[in-house]
Image (cartoon, rainbow, N blue to C red; front, side, top):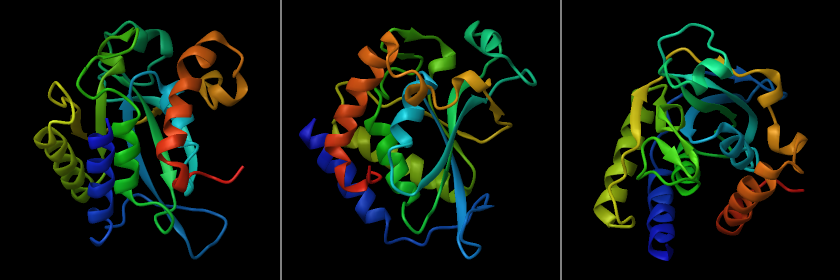
Amino acid sequence: MLKYFTITLALAFSCQAKTQKKIETEMINDPNVKTEIATFGAGCFWCVEAVFLELEGVTKVVSGYEGGKVDNPTYKQVCSGTTGHAEVIQVTYDPTKLKYEDLLEAFWLSHDPTTLNRQGNDEGTQYRSVVFYHTEEQRRLAEKYKEELNKSGSWANPVVTEISKATTFYPAEDYHQDYYNLNGNQPYCTYVIKPKLEKFHKVFKGKLKSK
């Protein structure tokens, strides 16, 4: 895994020198600063949301559904595996503090991208590993990163993450939002999300929000 960490960090740093194209924007407190959007699926969105909320520069994370064929799907419908949606998070971030490359690094480090439709005990197409890109620059960076990971041999099996153009994003029900922070004593949070966060903190300690 040390080799993997070294490669991912090197990729992130090398990409930061490139010009970042502007994507979907939304104003935040400072009228001179615009935020950008990124969308990822990496298993249960409770886990992924908890990880990305820790990053300095992330202003908002919304759990939801994307990539399916049913309008306004419910959690129950998505869990049936019949709608085609993935559980995803939509990340709003300040590109002056955090680059898209940093988000890709966090994405690939925080789950197993060699199991397309399974993360731990969560199995089904709704838990697939996926990057939904909003611009051609995001697509290029995601595909380059995936290619480099496969060339590196960091994983015993190939990285099979889906890279697809962003479609309609449907926010999940209110009780799914900020799940870990509001339900930290629940067994899933204690035994699944907390260990993932502890591992993430060790690797990304220089990019985390101040407590």
